[in-house]
Length: 327
Ligand code: NAD
Ligand code: LMR
Image 1 (cartoon, rainbow, N blue to C red):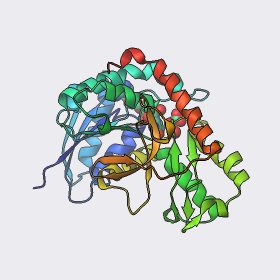
Image 2 (image 1 turned 120 degrees about the vertical axis):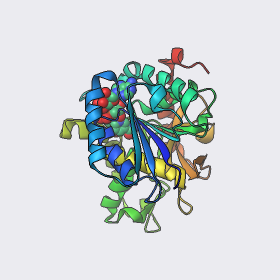
Image 3 (image 1 turned 135 degrees about the vertical axis):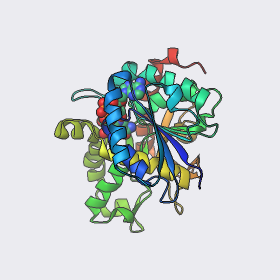
């Protein structure tokens, strides 16, 4: 039998966790021939709810689900993990910015970085979803000195998917017709969803939509979409976030198709003028669990100013948690 892939999910009894684990069990990430072991982490107060999730996983009779481990100890949940989804943390509520969660959630990611360092498979790939995701990824990676920073990433894919969907709707096109979108920067209201290089059915997007729509409607709508969902649904996005997490991990493992790129939060490396020391949303091409920041996009003043604003915010977030950065 094919060796099962061990997938750790933190916050597995939460809203995103509940939308994610059944899709992982069904093979939506790794396909119909790859068995999986789910290694689920929760805090002790949610242990009973997690037991209920495990019961439902059993009742789903998923042919690919080889085993389920449920624990309130990161050391157990991360043992030999090949892939890790770091979701568990507090979501914001109406009126908050994601960075208001920084001090509340930061320690979780320092502890989990250390546990991954000790327990996970040496080639583990880690996706940080819990907010503020970019800075939490920085914290986790910094606390895992035996792993490469390149094994960590933060989620920009929900913003990316939102941007693709909004452009497709505006242009009267299908999702598959849209290429070349990138969301630069922070998963926050300073993010820069960029369609300057995007195409719709092979035509430049900016030949199909008006510049004023792009600047005055599209950008603020994508930047504020998370808050709009919270206001409308009464809770933080969950199913779309879980779906984006699957998309992110799948693209990272399987690779970007053709010549296009996706958006991932990765360690800044000087690309597009962003100095190292933060996790930044970039256009990346991926292959078999590695990524390369795409260098070919030309930036004008408009784009550079927006990238700089998001970089500034991320440096301020970093300044707020330097005590949690051992390297
Ligand atoms: P939720 O409150 O429904 O669930 C979070 C779960 O995490 C809870 O069950 C809680 O018990 C658990 N948890 C808390 N601390 C934990 C710890 N130390 N270890 C393990 N589990 C722990 O929240 P949610 O809606 O599932 O959202 C989870 C996080 O994801 C939030 O921070 C939210 O803001 C974030 N989020 C990020 C994106 C993104 O695009 N990056 C999108 C949506 C939500
Ligand atoms: C989102 O973008 O939907 C999430 O990050 C939740 C939030 O706080 O906006």
